[in-house]
Structure formats: structure tokens, C-alpha cells
Image (cartoon, rainbow, N blue to C red; front, side, top):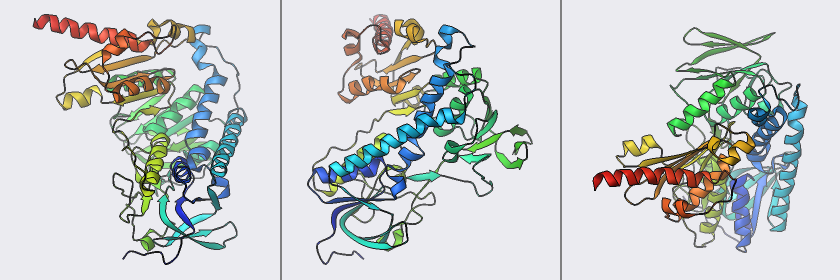
Length: 474
């Protein structure tokens, strides 16, 4: 039964969680002149994204690339290193600096927009009331007309595995490791698993990836995945696909991972990347008339409303795609809808960025998806080694692939692998979003030398193929 407010609420919009989705929801509401507040622990301002997720992992990656000199080895030889003995302190110094600055930015943005920060954890008392528990255990009841759940997720931990956060870790505890392991088993070949596999392989750790599926990153273009796999194998990464972990044993000298096939893998450490669990256990959702699924996720409609119309949920807690970028837009969209402000729906086609070494990024459909959907397409490819900029930066393996409709010449998909892939993809995104054709890329003038020039090279490649086919048909 719906609960109505008997008096003026404390806030118009109350957000539980200060990650990317929560921040943008609160600030959007404040920009629209509403009284907005955010609930989160003092030491968690910025959410998982800033403290254990996107920001620290991507900063760690940047530190790895800089200190190892990996990207310079095509120019200066395979023995090139900026620093021979890289320690955890070397890696975390940069991470701690960036995290600290990002927290300051979030606090400043909330303050500047007059969003009230309520320190503590929140749980529902009823559909309009949240109890905020502070650091000393005191509860404060806060009422709101609209509530946005943006609590995020935590790494899922299989009950059969004994984590000690030193030798058996997840993607959170790996950030506080004591030393760079000489060898490591990574269980799970998803996005997070592959990002950390490539980072530690670049550091010189001997990495074994165990994945129960027959492949990795199956939502990506097959050729791009093969290129990444080849590059990682070149860094001495071993893949065990179609294998399941039966047990992880901790020993004085490290860990022993036992597979169901009988194989045993000795390593200094094990990192589990077995998906993520929604942080909804302590919200008392039932008191608001809500429930989460077994993975802690909350169902929402196209406006990010839950089953209770004035309660919204955004970000990782609602599941796929669980990206900081999409979470931000979900938060803004939910706040606009709650405040009665017109807002365009988030576009169906969103860029995906995977911060492996090298980066992978794409937008639109893959060759396999188009083939399965019986959609005709032609492929245009540009390789970094053929670009002056690719030679200058020493990236000989990067590539850009355009999938183009031969009939109307629109872009059906853009797939990129290599340096700056997550930046480069936005050119394709802009063209697809505006309904442009490959002919724009053919006629456009790009700065030279740049990686962006790869769009023109790939566009010329694909239009030449389409022209040949058209001539055959004449």
C-alpha cells in the first residue's frame, strides 16, 4: 500500500549513494531548483567508482604503462624499462593522488550546487522515509518526495572460496596488495579480469586466466578479441578456457588452484573476478515495497522508476551495462523525470570501453551479430602501423574497423583496438548518432598525423569495396 507524506518533506529528491549515478541525479535535481540530498559514508564519497573501481583501476593502468615503458618498446627495444624494480608504492602513489583529488572534486560539486551531504548509511523506514545511520550508530529520519537508489555493487565472492585479501583477493582488495606478485591466477575472463590480467602481465607477472566459458569478451568483435588475446599471449599470459575452479588452497609459499579437470596451478596469488553483487542487502527494501533479485539488482522501467513510482534506481545496482558513463546519464535522466522536466531517452547505441592493455572500444553491432540478423555489411579496416601517428607513438598493433551498410552507407558498428581506442570511438559515435554516412569520413579532412585519420583510411577502404561490388552488378 502506498505511503503518502503528511507534511512537507525534508527534501524533494533524496539519493542513496554518491557514485557517478547518485552524484548526477542529485546535482541535476539541484540545477532544477529542487532541494536535494545525498546519503553516503564520509569515507565513501564518490562511491565505488572512485575508491575501488573505475578511477583507481584506470590510474593503476596508467602508472603501469608509464613505469614499464611498455608502449615504447617498439621504438626502443623489448628490453626498454623506465624502472626496473617496480614496487606497490610506485603504483599506489599515483592512485592515491588521483583518488584524493577526485573526492575533492565530488565534494566541491555537491557543495557548489547546494546538495546536502548526509554522512552515514541509509535504509528504508517506509516509502518516503529513510533512516540515515551515522558513524557512531545514531539514526536520523529523513523524508523525501522522491528517492533515488544508487548504491552500486561489490565484487561477488563464491562461498566455496576462502578470501584472505592478501593471497586470495577480489578486484577490491587487489588494490591494497602488499607486493607485485611474480605469478597470479585470475579466475574470470570478463572485463575486470582481462583489465587486471593485462596490467599485471605488463608488470612482468606470469598470469594464468581460468574461464569456464570457451572464450572471453564474447560481446566484442571476434577479430578484436583475437588481437587482444595474441597481444596478451605475447606478454606470457596463459589462458585456460572451458575450465572450472574446484578449489583454491593457501600454502606458506603461495596458492594452489585446483581445476575440476585435475590440473593444478601454483601461483603467488589468486584474484577472483566472478561478477558483482548489488549493494541492497542493508536497504530494507521490503519496507518500501521493493525487492531485489538474487544478485542484488533492482528492476526499473524506461524512466528508471522501480515498482514504487516515486522511487528510482540507477547505476550498477540495476545491472547491465554497469558502466560509470551510462550510470551518470541514468542519474540525470531519473532526476529529470522525477522533477517533471522533459528529457530524451538514453540512446540505445552506447560506446563500450575496456581498459585492457591495449584498449578495446566499440559502438554498434559486431560482424557476428549482423550476420545472425541477416543484415548485409561491408568492412573497412585501418591499421595503426600504416599511420604516421602510429609509427610516432610506437603502436604497431592497433586497428580501427568500420562496419557499413552497402545500401544506405550508414555505420552499423565501429570497433577499435589500440592506443586511445576509448577516445577514438567517439568520432564514430557522433556520426552514428547523427545518422551520417561513411561518405562524410571519406570527404572529411583530419589533422595529420593523428590516430583519428584511421577513420578516413578505413572509410576509403570500405567505399572502394562497395564500389567494386556495385560495378559487378552493373
